[in-house]
Length: 249
Length: 253
Ligand SMILES: Nc1ncnc2c1ncn2[C@@H]1O[C@H](COP(=O)(O)OP(=O)(O)O)[C@@H](O)[C@H]1O
Ligand SMILES: [Mg+2]
Image 1: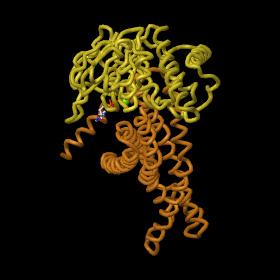
Image 2: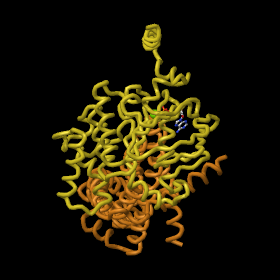
Image 3: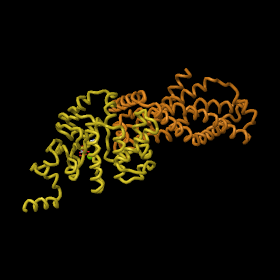
Image 4: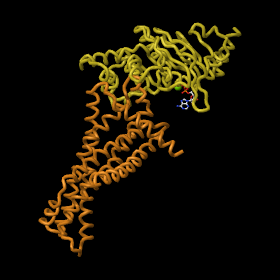
């Protein structure tokens, strides 16, 4: 039963995504829609991403300095730990979990509302490839914008670590800077962007799927919106693990 | 011309349509009438492929609609306009953007040409100075008109209207009916209209089918309606005790 259900959704999802990437009827319309989505996803999420990142960096700095207190590990390691845990794990994962809640639920509700109000049917009748017009611009926009947001999140997070550590006297400015500049592996940044790209596709496509096939009324719409977040989150964490295994192996 | 051949449609256990065979002609308002729940919307959605039939075929002229692939279906749909029961206007766009949407998507017209076409269509449905309004700022009747304007903006060969005048006052309802009929005649469109309104039947019923229990219980045109002694049709027309009284007293005289 569960397996049947799973295969049904997987099949429908794959078909939807394939249809979504047919050649656009009119590139200019898709382009305009993509720009609108970039603005919505990017500018619209900047504040919340920044806010969360500051605290993530700050908390990492404070807690690691607590854990390392009284050990033989040099203090400047805290800067190094903040930098790497942020870049490898916290910035991409937490940012995308938050975006699933903000952007994903929004997409599911928007597309689901259009389905219920017969807007999608109306477009179909005109001859529009609705999966294409409604989904492709969102996925493409997310592909560009979410990695940018993640990069910004990583930067702000490290700044957050600095703010939490240096002015409060946990360590000196020089120590933090030394930490941030130690043992830098550029490959970790690659890993961050790989994660960001994969998570971006997951969270947008899963959310669009939830909205695109919604039925019924406002209760179902609410459910679709919740499902968008829940399934995106689960898949992001699953993908996080898989990427971690593959890229560090 | 559109032909439906032996259409069956079930939802689970429920058989909604049980063998519908009929033709819809160009330059006529073809009506599908029947009570609420008779399956009018289901039939209309089958004709345009928004629903798939359990069995049966639909032909657009000589093209077997359900045998087409997705691209070919879209090619036919460019020639199809549809007015939805709830208008289905895009609520984040203005009236002008709504009507212009098909032009933006499918034509190479310049900005000016598009605007002219949009204004012509809005003019055609008697709407003035609403270009920059949003659908939520319009009355139900005006929304239907915008829906019609959007449906005809690409000069369709086939026009489908799902209860175009439900929820409107009788005067406005008649205006909308007449509008649909004159657009149909002018442009030689094959128009299919769902309705449960007898005023529409008598006003614009060129070719009428009555759905009852999933089958066509009666067919004819508006002149044949009054002469028919078909029981289902009589029950449909004279639905209320008031109308039955009226009929009976007319018969006595
Ligand atoms: N998507 C659907 N799923 C299940 N039943 C449906 C669906 N659409 C319509 N029906 C059923 O089909 C019947 C006819 O509905 P409809 O065509 O909307 O009637 P109307 O003549 O008022 O337009 C109704 O009994 C309705 O419950
Ligand atoms: Mg209906």
